[in-house]
Image (cartoon, rainbow, N blue to C red; front, side, top):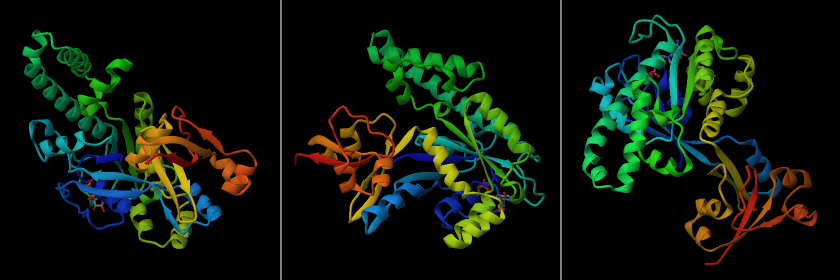
Length: 364
Ligand code: GDP
């Protein structure tokens, strides 16, 4: 599955957000830096209205949404790359995630201590990014030393690694994250294998006060500006509101949202933004037993998509029968779509499209 790491300075609202996401009290929110010591891992259903629609048409007994994993990663402070706070553990946890949801404090509250004693989300973002860059520099320098002998011996892989690490180091030493380095297709895999922290895509989460949830505030506007300049994404959320909503039943939640002037929970936007950030798409399977959503990276071929359900589906893949979501819905289901000639048979080279309703035929 795909993993998003929730990071940020202490007391910015990470645990509150994580609680809301996973609807558990597992990540205890408390007005105390370092309260999230162990990384908390939670699975979140990806909200998708299309799935409910498909289930209704197919008369599915069960609805199974696709899932995304969130990891609440222990607080990072200035000096983490030097082992301050929970630094080393933080860095190890962050290596394992696909993308970073970086929570920034965009609310004022005299009762909630800010580690730097002031609310400044742009400076906070820089503090964290600096630690990540320092950690990358340190790990590259170590690894460069480790491969010196192999490079001298002409080991092709080591030579490639060295070249990529030096390119990363040049950017990092100029104060830029490694993600600014442009990498050719043939280097893409080796580049990913370096697992640099500053190559992970970033989604800034502006945690605003309750009153600013609909429109944002001056702080979130500054973050939006920074994110745009970097080519990163941002969402505006009130973690406290989200936590309250997560405890309500759906009808109450809807009323609460309307009162707040919000169209949908911020968490839905957050999860969708994560999907976009990771270039993920959804396809569906729908029948009387269940309607189910599955996650794939954009550009996935039919056999690989089948493999998400089961390895055997990929190995024995014969073909996929596919109906576009819009056809399925407008024609009123599989049979009708088939009769209208909207069910296509697709082979191994077919690139699955977001919203495809699929059946796989395979040899066992
Ligand atoms: P973490 O250290 O980043 O995980 O932060 P927490 O989620 O534990 O939040 C720290 C404190 O800030 C808690 O007392 C929260 O209730 C409070 N908090 C979180 N979000 C907001 C917010 O939007 N507004 C206000 N006023 N307080 C918040």
